[in-house]
Length: 200
Length: 200
DNA sequence: GCGCACCATGGCACACAGTGACGTCCGGCG
DNA sequence: CGCCGGACGTCACTGTGTGCCATGGTGCGC
Image (cartoon, rainbow over all chains, first blue to last red; front, side, top):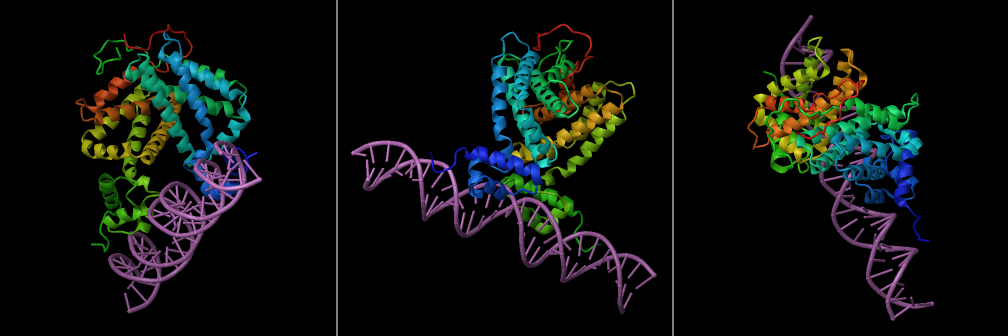
């Protein structure tokens, strides 16, 4: 038994989530969060670089799962198929945490500052994905467009899944959206000179 | 002759741009900007809601041009064609301001906080575009995916245009990228033959 | 059991962003 | 001339984020 209560970071995350739900993001100070977690303001910033990040630290595992899935997709899979696999893996991961992620998303959706941070996370996921796809031999432009389409599908599908009216599984929603977006980045019909050499 | 020097907002924007270029964004305080513009800190916040926005206020005209172009695209134009028109109009607008926008972009690209704001601007453009496309009769999913693809193309193309090594016109770059991303959001119903996403 | 170094935490001071309330100066207008 | 309104300044304040140093358990060697 350590003197300090265990899982300080987790306590901060829980405290933040509940306080944001109670009073909203802007009416909650870092001192409030730290107090509820039994710590001080100064310690909060030892676990999180800023106030927004307290809601996103846990999503690091999502990013890792996503990128690992892209990396380990079959060698002959197309770019879209690789992204599809990542979407499927993500859907599975979220399936049994719906209650938590819904609550979290509800807070984000009413707080511009948190929406900004969400955009940043998605954009960095897309950039990383584009790099991974290029390493698989995908053309640079195609890789970047497919990667961004993948995160867009994730975002749209997730928002739709979380809606109270929705009855479908996340995997189903993502699958449908990907089909809509598929053919995306089809091979350009007419051969034209590529500006940049492909990885070959 | 009014007592106050004219174009206070413009002076603030110019002062901010030059100071950010000299010392960087984080080493420039709002007081510094206001002082160079011959104003006080308090007045800065009367023209801009926050420090980041001083670099983005001028891009409001871009947003307006983009949305107007979508709105006034021919009735029979497809979603992708409407976005293509918006890209072309944007390219034309930027063509004769390359020096200014390059300098501005160089600052943004080394400042995470400004990159965040840029993502927000692009995301809100994409959301607005999706709404406009839906009003033209485009399916909701298709509209959202095409809209986000459009802003992605704009972002990627712009970054490539600004690179010192680049010799192509922005319009050309955007055109090529759009062709890569075209076929995007093909009609969802018919099963299309799978193709490798890489360039043959 | 006894020290001891480590490390999570607290305390303090500070710079800066952003905001509200209020005062001030100038031009215009009757 | 006197009044009004708008652009600007001054002051005070909250809250974020950070550097520096003190402190007090904890687990380790002995």
